[in-house]
Image (tube, rainbow, N blue to C red; front, side, top):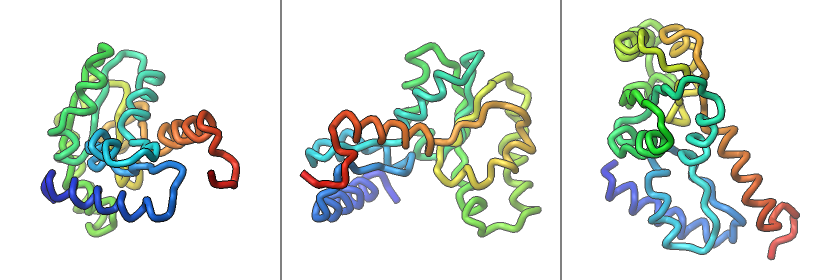
Length: 181
């Protein structure tokens, strides 16, 4: 989808979700998270993205401030991760990996999948980044294959950091009870 198509689709989804009076909306996609500010301008419902919490978590786990971002082409091209981490002094190697999505979704045989992953990651495997951001929610499904090429590093997925921020938002807004306001 183009940037404009995705933005339109997200606005429609947000409009639909508002019918259910959610306490919080979580954008559980890195590429969709690029539209956070736009979506926030459309509603008063708190919205949590996956990029901000993941970047904060990366700050706490890296030892050498050298990070590798594996994400879809659109997420890499947006520069959102890179700019956020560079502001706090990180070096970021960003690798566009949209071709990993069908692998993670199970549409590619194991041998071909490893060939694609190896050819994409082997050229950067010698770089001394200590942390790898799996900057697509699908990439946790192929973490083992990524590990087989990049080896021992801190692998950061966006699920846990995002869940922690969601909990904080709910707690700070007194929204943890079952009762709706």
